[in-house]
Length: 230
Image 1 (cartoon, rainbow, N blue to C red):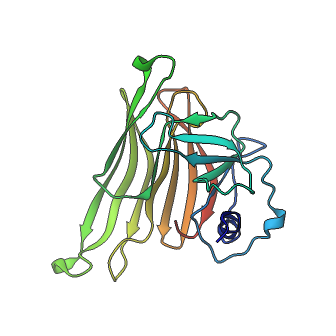
Image 2 (cartoon, rainbow, N blue to C red):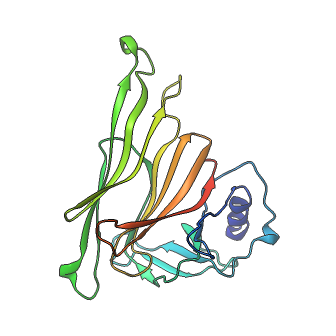
Image 3 (cartoon, one colour):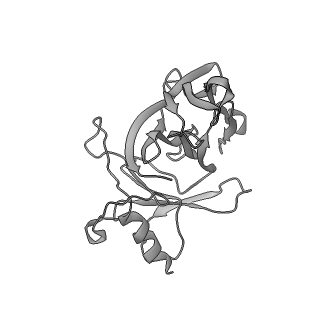
């Protein structure tokens, strides 16, 4: 299938919306592997303001390139973004693209190209309490309580998302906390994150955590879209 047709097919099958009450031009993100039964008219999508984030070789310093989206290109980006005040041409990042379970940790270093000694090392981790079913019956765990995503950087350790989720009778959990991409998108040598949250398997809210110069805060939260599953 032609890549252009594939990208449009993914976009029109994804229920995307944008919300950000702090700005007149909110940040919006299209995550291209999200699916939804709703329909969108591709002719009404204005791509002129979108930047595309492409993954290059995984083991080089600037392993993502960012440029204006061109729907005629055969290359498929990981996601599209618009509304960001500043954006880099290339960056180091990590395409995670999965649900995080309690006890998991990702260590990521945001490189400072001007001064390597000032590169920041972040610990991104999840916590939670697995509540077992009675008599150890299948599906063994009925929910996760105090399910939480946290980020530690230097002396700062903050909570990003906290929620409870239930399990399916057939096993597995409805919804959860997803990490899609981490890196430095706006060029300030600090961590940015694209995260998804869901309390039900059929709906995921996309949230972009943009780095904030206030060390005690670390991020500004932007609700940037949604889709049925990713």
